[in-house]
Each structure stands twice: as structure tokens, then as C-alpha cells.
Amino acid sequence: MIKTLAFFSNYFNHHQKALCDELYKRLGEGFHFIETEPMEKFRSNMGWGKEDIPSYVIRCYESGQSENTAVRLAEESDVVVMGTAPERYIKKRLEKNSLIFRYTERPLKEGRWKIFVPYLAKKFYVNHISNRGRSIYCLCAGAFVSSDFKFLLNSYKDKCYKFGYFPFPEEKTWEELSAHRMQNDRIRILWCGRFLKLKRADLLIRACERAKAMGYDFELELVGNGEEEQHLKKLVGEAGLNEITRFMGYMSPEETRAEMEKADIYICTSNKLEGWGAVIYEGLSAGCAVIAPSMAGATPFLVKDGETGFVFRSGDAGSLSDKLIALLKDKDGAVRMGRRAYDQMHEKWNPDTAAERLLTVSDHLIQGERYFYEDGPMSEAPIVYEDWYRE
Image: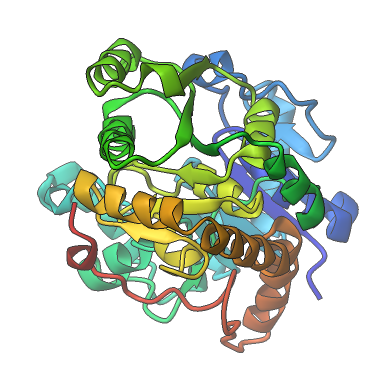
């Protein structure tokens, strides 16, 4: 039975806390999160890292003693989960062939060209190919991770598990969320994120322009800030959407979740550089009718097209507007879709289930038994070819 687990990553944040809390609940002092570097300033300026630091977090960059503790935990723990952290921590562990999970987004999201860059090719070989015969497995934070590793790098075959990031689950009941939404005067559409080119909020504005021209009644809220904000405001004006659009500015994760609880429809528009897409997870968990881009990492894992949400072809405003109009046309259908999404997230895709399954699978692997759940976290991650979801 697993008694100790060490989770290495660059820094601790709200996307990891819920999962870590669940692991700590099960393992107590046997669980540690090792933070290997300070958080980037741009993320702390966004409100990340404001939460109290739990007792299980070790900041190994703050003192030599903490570094020594991190090295010892990497070698002695029953299980090590390796996020974005220096490889030196697991060097001895690899030599001993002790259980390791790599927790990663897709390595080739910028393109397959990275395979042909000499220093990157060497890194891929050393980290992922040369160790493929050892007891090292992959927690796929995105549906395209397995294809990058198994199909393109010939590594982690039969070793890729569906995983992701697990923010705190929605606390309100379905009935409470429904009561919130019944107070909306018109259908409320929500978008959240940084205003960057890769987030493609312009696609939503073009889709809303078409929907408004067809006579549908709704309001649009955009939460966030960033370099594209003025450009997006200009697009809203040119599309004739000023009267029904609100730019809400930056909001904390808690404030953003509150807006999701009131929204009828949540839309993510990011391109394939979105390795996961935590907002997709949060929108589904809050019971919104979610429209998600085909190339975001979370989409193939979490969104069953027409059941728990709609999937539009990434980068295609026409495809997005078709899905949006389908929801605006059938409000009752959108509510049913949101309920199925809510149930899915609360039954399977949540930090409680993820932590329990991670420990159960670890037990099996240490005993020499390969084990996958049938669906949800820690089920087998299939190869999802990028060409099926072309940007």
C-alpha cells in the first residue's frame, strides 16, 4: 500500500491545490509537494499564488536543507510525480527503477519541427526514449500527449494515463446553479482568459455577430485582460455588439468561478497551444453548456460532442457560430447538456477521484500489474491524431 508520494513541480498554484489536498488527506505526512523555483511575476500579478501555502509544500530553492530534503524524498518515496522540474531529482530513482509518473502537457504543441532541433532531440531522447524500459509512466495533461509520445517519439507505449489539472470542484448543487441561471434576463455567454492571440477571443466575437444578425437575444461577458484587449474592443464595436457586451477586466479565480455559476453558456476559443484548458474543466463543473475548441488538450477527454458539450473546429469561426446558434436555438437542450457535464465532472473528473485512482494504480504498478480504469482519470490515454483536429 502506498504510504509516501512526492510531487515535484516548478511552483505550487491553485490548479494543483485541490488534487494535492486530496493526496494529503489520504497520505498525511507521507505526501509532499516540492516547489523547485519561484513563480513567474506575470502569474503572481494575475493573482496566482495568493493562497496560503500548505504544510506539505517544500520550497527547495529557499535553503540548502530544503534541497537536501527534496533529494531524499525523490529517492525514498514510494511514488514520485514529476511535473516541470529538474531531471537531477530523479536520476538515482531511475537507476533503482522505482516508480515515476511524468505529469505533462504535450511536448510538441508548437509543432513536430521540435524533433529536428538538435538540443531538443537530445533532451527527448535522454528523458523519454532512453528510459522507456524503466518503471516510468505518463500522466497526460491533455489528449494529444499520448500521440506526441507514443506515435512521434516511440515512448510510453501502454504507459499513458488520462489525467489533467483538477481545480476545486463546484460546491453548489445543480438546483442552486439552476436557481442562479433562472435570474438571467437573457442568455448569458461567458469567456474567460488572458487576451492573447493564442486564446482567439476574436472567433467568439465573430460568432456572436452572426448570432445577433439572426435575431438571437443574449449577452456576452469577457473576463480577463491582456495585450489584445483594445483590438477585441474594436472588433466588438465593428460587429455592433457594444450594447450586449461587457469587458469585466481581471478577476480572481474565485470571482471567475462565480461568473461561471451564473453563465448559461461557457465558450473557450484557444488554439492548439492550449495544452490543457482549465477553464473548460471549470465550465463543465459549473454546469454550463460548454463549447470547446477541438485542439485544446482538455477537449477530447472531457467534451463528448452533443452530450456534455459541443466541439467546434479550432480556428473556424463558422464552426463555432454553428454550435453557438444550436445552443441559442434550443435552450432546454443546453440545460440538459449542462446537467450531463455537471454529473460527469462530479462523478469522475474531480480531484477526489483522481487522487484515489492515482494511488490505486500506483499500488498495482509497484506489484508488477499493469492497470487502467475504464473511463475518466487513470484510464488509458489513446493516440488522438492531431490531423483529426486540424487548426
